Image (cartoon, rainbow, N blue to C red; front, side, top):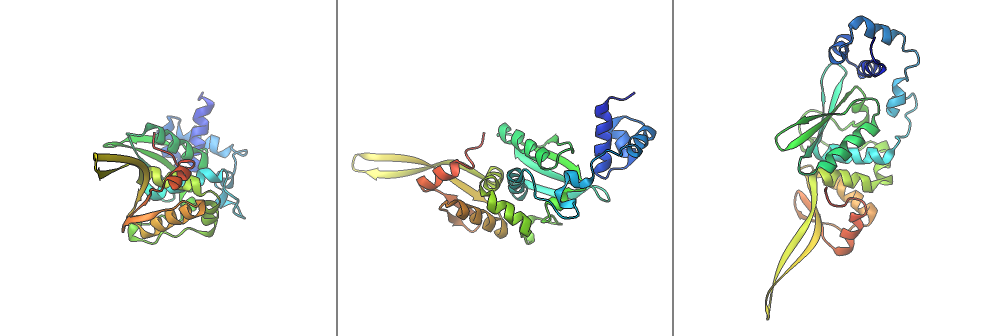
Length: 253
């Protein structure tokens, strides 16, 4: 007799596209009992219940602000790869210096696509958050072979609507993956001697011109002043702009 949580785990693995044999290997339940659970799972919610893009008429994402946040994380430090015939793995890489951001990213992944486990793998200086499902490509149609900056990154209309409605969470994902909030120190020579001043500012750096443009557009939606430092990096340095962005992004933790 298996605990009900084992049954639910096995059914989730099957729903993600894994085989009965693989579900058996991961849960420890026999293949025959997993087939029985599968065949009697008449009350199992359909795919559209966990993936709104799979419904006959695609449904709005809920909660949309969490999706905007995860989209920013994916564009900054994430990738999507195929693991089997129809199963994809979404990976988000988080710097180990910011444990709070790791926890927040894991919660966001679980909220966007509930029912699919989020696992962790320690890397050199970072933690890889992983979730496997056949639905991730439906939520991130920007996926493709090669690096993001070597291909076009264009949001689908439904994604653009989400980002336009929730630019703050989107920027939070972008900046907490490929940006930072720090202090800029400026040296002034005065008649009384050298004086140092320090003020906070945000930076966002990415090799993709398309992703930089998405960041700029989201900042414009919030009314945050920004400028390019160089070809692949922008900054927010004006006091009122930093204070405004603090309400939506804030420092890493």
